Every structure is written in C-alpha cells, then in structure tokens.
Length: 121
Image (cartoon, rainbow, N blue to C red; front, top):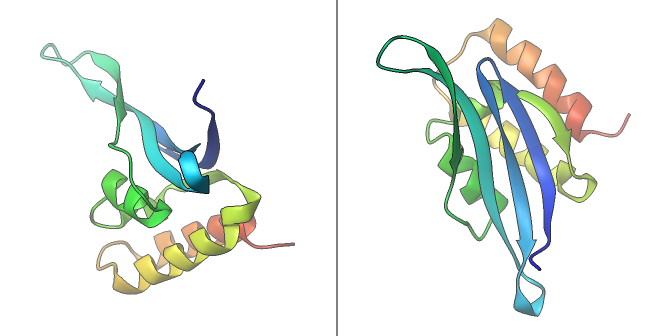
C-alpha cells in the first residue's frame, strides 16, 4: 500500500488543491497535486472537475505544476505540514519577488495568511 501524506492544502474561490508526498524506496519522496475546480459545462451549468498533476521530485516543482505563473501565492494557505513550513515560506517569498501580477493589497492579505500557516507564533 502506497502511503501519502498531505504537505500543503490551498483554497481558492471555486476550488482548491492538496499537494501530497509519497515515500519512495531509499528514503526519497515524490510530490503530486490533487485539485478540484468549478467550471461551466456547454450549457453554462456549474460542475466540479477533479484533476491531478504528474509526480515531481521536489515541492517547488509540484507548486510550479499547479501554477506556472506563481499565482498560487495568492491562494489561501489552509494547512502546511510542519517539516515543510520553512521551505514553503521561502518559496512563497521567492515567488512573490519574481511575480508580476497581483495588487499590493492582495499580496498583503496573502502574506499574512502565509505567515500564519508557515511561521511559528
């Protein structure tokens, strides 16, 4: 039986994503995302669509697969596995420095949420 562990859970209006890690032989891990999105069908009716990313060797690569443009930093951080809090906080900061989108107000709200999820009280 393959054991997976929730590393990061993000929420966004109309959906969300969870990034899981799965142990590999030799002590390494791989990461993949599973998400759900609200979309419209051909009749403009709302429907929920489930999706998955391909496995990645790093959490950084998994984050890139869910959002190539770095917009994941503006999503709501619901939970972060303790041992990844520091690493994910660093990715948040690095992504924010290189991201061209978003307003300062949006980033300020997101920053506070990420700090609550990733930094010790």
